[in-house]
Image (cartoon, rainbow, N blue to C red; front, side, top):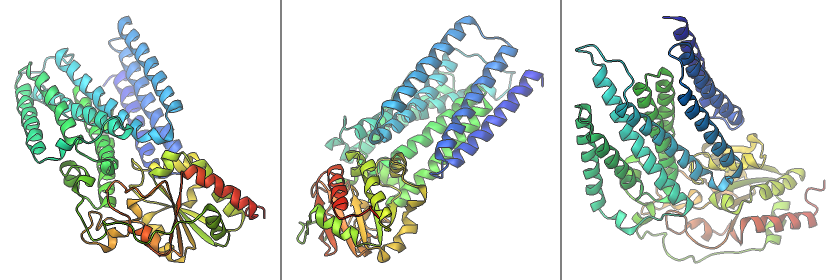
Length: 478
């Protein structure tokens, strides 16, 4: 092993270690920002190491430098614009788009490596050609599915694309099977050396990604995003075999494994299997009439003033954020409300359900943007035993994750799903625009309970009025 190889090996090893530390740091809200920077630095280090290796061996032609520089500048500019301009409510769509970019990158690398091979001719009887062709085929197959599936997921989250009724019929499974079998056949032909089958594999895999993702409803999008993230890692690992990059193999494998673990966590949080998410269609389309799916009969509404009076007398308050809070962009106004309560000696914590919002960790990111202390964010398993000792619960834009049907109605499509036990608190205020259902499409029994009061209106507007009422009561002036 010569000196350039040793230097490249050391840089790759260091980059992998930094990336692993970065991924580990993302598991905690407190260290997530620094961990993200660390992981980005690891990737930058790997790029610098690769360029240094080629400069020290075969060299880099001027034309290649032009592509490298232009590509880096365009990518950096687009990334900066997205980071600065994309609002927090659009973060799920952005994550889905980035997953798609990852899949497309692996797809293009595999196509380029197949059409313009750069590896040396392997010795007779070697398995290298087979491994190379198999890696290319896997990278194309997974990359195309990841790209098309991620674009569909992004379009659905953005509201550009709805779930067509025809995608909920049983015949869709036959269509997807046809795409899957076609992909498998072209996969085998490609490994066997049939060059033209590469385009059939690309088309069939792309259609399969669309066919699997299109029927999935918004309630299951956190699972879909996690799974597509895993796919992007698998595609990257396969691309690593294609270009003979140990770093890409290891990094892709880590991302793929982390995505699969997160997918399992999301499925557990929704009490659904991955099979039911991918092949069961939209959750709302499966909803059947249950004992708790009728009209509301005992709704109690109250004014912002009444809510403020109750909060003033409380000793402990739990806030339950949901996607409605993100839509209203009310996280900063909420933080002003909780600051006043804290200044009045009232204990405030935030209950975070694992699938609240439209992507894993959505509520954590949203509240972190409003500078909510990390210590106040409590996961479902930790906070559920605390509800009976809580005076007031503020539910902001959350619906299915606080529905008691999940625990007491066996005929409900939500039955068995872990939910926040907000009904155990002394008083519950639900801030909501109207009585529309959540993603499941069923009524929320919480709204009918005697200790629940509805405060109707836009979350940001209601919270702004609540700040005024608390000021009039002298809350926060102590």
